[in-house]
Length: 50
Image (cartoon, rainbow, N blue to C red; front, side, top):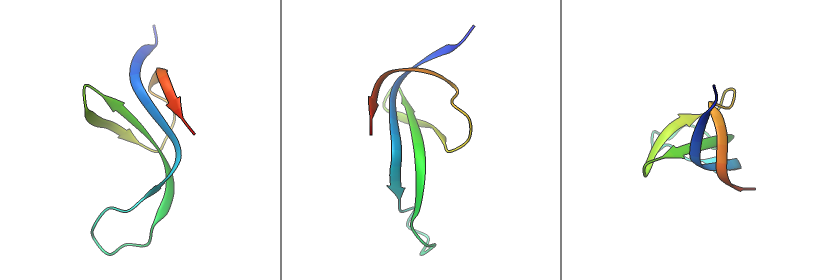
């Protein structure tokens, strides 16, 4: 059974604050917190921002 995720931000520019180069990444947000950065989708998003 697939998990339902609150928000999927697709292809965002990730700046992590470590002076590492910016990178494109998908982010999945659940309950106001980052659930996952990049990788395969952990479930189906209720809302997607592209």
